[in-house]
Image 1 (cartoon, rainbow over the protein chains, first blue to last red):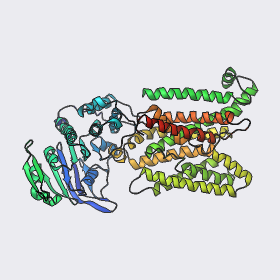
Image 2 (image 1 turned 45 degrees about the horizontal axis):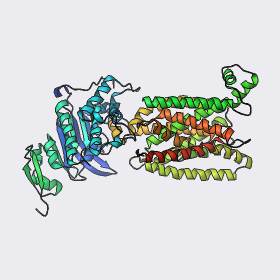
Image 3 (image 1 turned 90 degrees about the horizontal axis):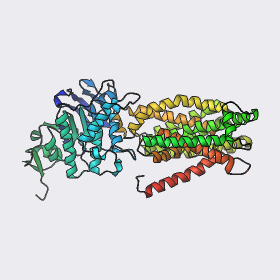
Image 4 (image 1 turned 30 degrees about the horizontal axis):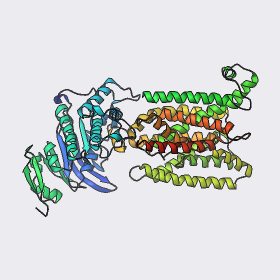
Length: 277
Length: 330
């Protein structure tokens, strides 16, 4: 709370290095284990994408990593310390989370909403500092929402709204940003817009990105590191080329697929084979 | 921000005008110069008596309880993200009333004891609702529905107590139930003022957390708010505000319910609008009390709670229907 967290516009290498790890973590909802005995290390400064079939536990893992869900056993650690033993506000200065369905208060403007991301950097009496102002400006710029700043959230389109939520997460100025399906409900162009914003953020500021995505080919294109989950376990992780293979698609999704190289990015592309192909 | 300041300024002016009018006007009406001289310690002894013994306590108590009701409503509605979630709708005021009527009728209690029993009753109701609506997380709608059920139970218990009670006591309890400022005393003012002196700083500290809770539990937790602890603290503070005010003047109908929605529609912007909500409540209570005392029926005075209900409800309906017509999100 006392550090002055000026927004880092400098080179990625000036970012502190963080280690976010899950150690033998079991996560459950209402007594049922969704993720059991899982260990994973999130590579620093990379874009990690978690994929898997519905109900495979990928969102649950993300909730565990972001301390929204307390593990039934095992630990999630940030820089070697259990995230549940560190003051929540302190974690929030390093780790940002954008959940699947955040709520915008009725009538709030884009700027006011983005400014709320500064909460973890403010003390008891909420002085609004120059660093806060700069972080908000930067977040608006980076997500191309500056021209919307005075508009009310309910006037915006779905794609604009999602960029505003990402801007809010950016104004928090996290070194690690976790996102649960940030492209859901967006058409394909706006999916790319949102993912490009995140890729830029990773490249320009060195922010570690961890996200759950459904679209396999987009996931493979944007990911440095992929984690493939099936029934609460990780069945493969590594570069997209290592993870996205025909055998793995069959194992994780029960999907017959052919994998080709994406003609644009060279990353693996999944061509699903239905009964008609 | 500037809009909030401007609206607040206007509300303060209206409140001051209403307060002065309430002190000046009556069976014996003071002129404005006389009133001001008296307020600052001068004037005849009869003016002094009328102002300080008869009228000022009523106005001061009106202002203090209005702040409590307005803030309690605003806090509950934001916390549960539901405009219906005001303490008078979800049985919290009902709980306070049951405990207060019980202590009045059965134990013959007065003053501070009645306030404390109202506080205990309201807290009991609040935690009952909280526990009953808990299903691995809190759901605002479930909280409201269970609260509405409890409000009806409270009505029944009060009905039973009043029909069983002695006729004169029952009459007294009934007047209290409707809510009125008639019995305002300096003791009441002291109780409410001390309570606010403790609770308002707590509200100020908790407001920043509440602003995050507005974004949903997950996002609030991600931003570093301890969701459960903050929510419990907010509920305790809001319940205390409404319970103590209810114990002193009865459940003034609709004040907690309408003040915040009216204030938020005035200032806009999705904030908590706590200060404007309190100011709207002051204007509402002072206005309603003036009407109840002077304008409704010749000769007899009507309890203030009847007027707040008559005025408050249609105003809210009107606001809702007009904002929808303009196409603003409801």
